[in-house]
Image (cartoon, rainbow, N blue to C red):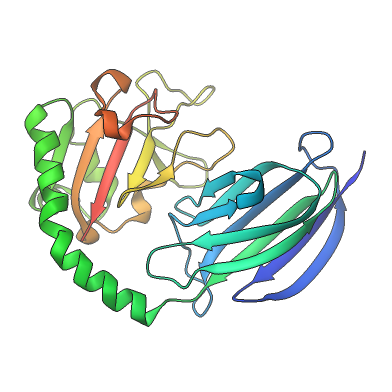
Length: 253
């Protein structure tokens, strides 16, 4: 069956819709939702945004390039929510048909009021974040870097600082991205490390999600890093996802 591919550009409201034919690879009888989230005024990519279809309990988190993918969307008009700390929430509805692939570019508007509140909360919670970091570091189950460690080691790229941590394997992709991978990973069968960014999963190990490019974060913006090589040494609070190839936790300033 030949489906349809729709391209949507969203800000606070739906601005435009275009369509073309495509072969689609989604499950029979359902639609596929693809897209990316940007800042509406600058087109800067937004990582860690939550994209939800509440009526179907479907959810995705944008990767380091702002991209997301949601499969198995049943036909009909579905409410869509997009949330990211520091931005005004987006609420809209999208019509899905059987066999469709819907592509969306979603523009979020920074919230001045929320950003002011975040700044206050960030100052109040910064010490707690580092307490959690120090608590896990005291357990000795992972590898840890502070901001000072990163500054001494990064040579302009976060990956260079990560290379100095024991047990870390780094892969450079064909398009230039730099990724952490499992110990047995190779180019034929790569198992990418899960990445948590400021408390939200930027990449949770889903094979349909783009892995997280560690060099998409400036070393000067990083407050601390935690790395757990496998499930056996990953703290309980960081488990529950497809993290058999390890977990990298990045805290920004």
